[in-house]
Image (cartoon, rainbow, N blue to C red):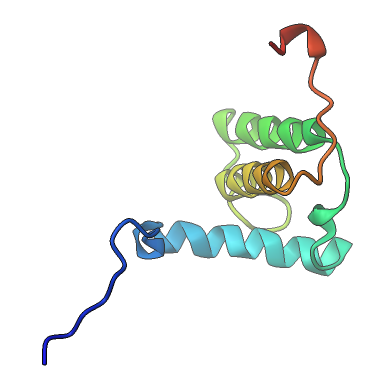
Length: 103
């Protein structure tokens, strides 16, 4: 009997770089310890995540690899992008972008 699995077109989670994913998980673990689990699921402002993302990017670009929490700044960038995206996809985040630029 031939093995069949109908998974064509489904997301391949194994394509996510695992070492990078582990670093992002460290960011979320630190956040859960500091702010509470799933704290990002509230109705915050999207620009808070974007500002944090930019601060971590700036720290990395100016020569600082690790955040004070001990995780890589780029993992913090990814985590902030994921939190913003999660809020957008769940419609649980305040879109406080400058309305001048929204079309």
